[in-house]
Length: 361
Image 1 (cartoon, rainbow, N blue to C red):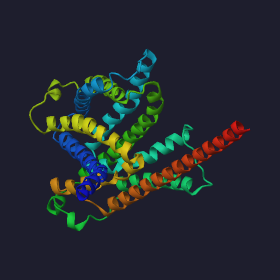
Image 2 (cartoon, helix red, strand yellow):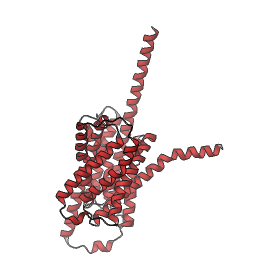
Image 3 (cartoon, rainbow, N blue to C red):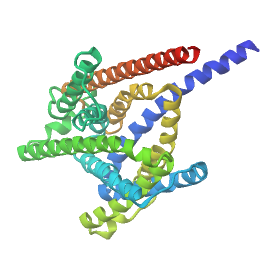
Image 4 (cartoon, rainbow, N blue to C red):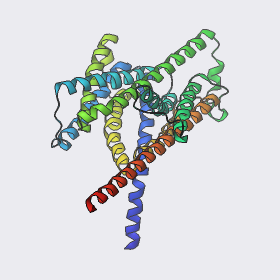
């Protein structure tokens, strides 16, 4: 009996690890499926419309049934703020992401997501939400981690170097390319896509920062997410209608495009959202963030096997810098949060002692 109880407890302790591994596989699948759909000819703006529509439909029942008793009145001003936050973050970020992935690769898309903590920290410093305590080691770690992380993204994007020999799948194809204009055009598209991907991550970081004030005004998180997906869908419809005038681009069939839309809308936004919230409640946000680089590794391996995507030593070096920068930022943030909690506990204990002295006096 004791052995069975111990086994159950061990399985319970391992559930957050299994959940985070699953989440990283899901995120890797998002990059892979998205790249496949865009490469097959799916219009990126139309893709965002259908993805956000699927996400809204998937989240709406849960928002209605699970938060119907939650007291969260929705005023007109709050609704306008949610609309603007959706436009600045979700709509802008997703449209830039899917346009950029058509010019780059799934591996690069997965790699640059590791810059989001660093970009978020830099933006928070500029607007006064974060401080840089350079007198403390954790403050230096956050600054250096941000610089190293963004530098890693630049190295990954613009420094190639020699190809990895064991992943050089198609040398005969590369030998057939002799027109320098083709190579120059490809290089130009890669640079354009890289800059757009970094802009997409910057917009996503802005969206994360803007969540704080909105959640204070409207604490029903699931309903808030559903509203933002719905508003983003409407905004993306307008954008897609302006950019894409061909009605045939909106047609869907039972193919990879529909599977990619359903996967990104339902699995990524719906299932992964709940798993991530559950893991944060169990282990905290730092534990959740520590698994982020796994999506890059998974995407790189699958891209090499599925699409014979060549990896370069420059990309490997950039990925290493990305991961090191990410962990420096997370370590510094974790130490800072730990010190703030300790200071709060000390302050509370001092207040209790003072209160005891007053009451006993």
